Length: 72
View 1: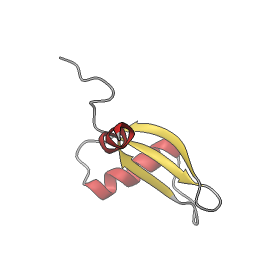
View 2: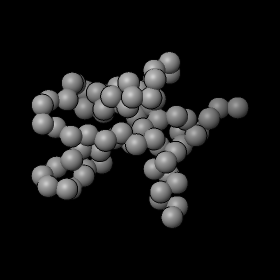
View 3: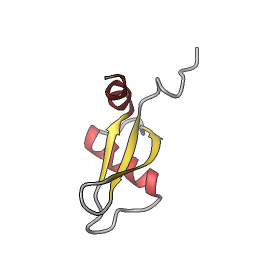
View 4: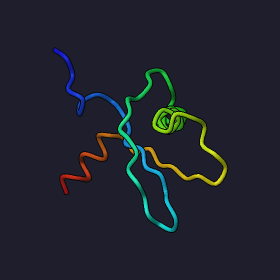
């Protein structure tokens, strides 16, 4: 049985804009075989299509945690 998109491991990626505002960039699949910190960093690169530049701030939240937060 195929997993739905919501059930597949992945991240929701955000970019911090000026001040304390965050912009939702993308949902990306989790790359298998990477430890947690490297998987988050890879999710950011996948979402923006490049290496982050100095001073840019990103957050990669597990898709499952994002969905739980939306329920409450």
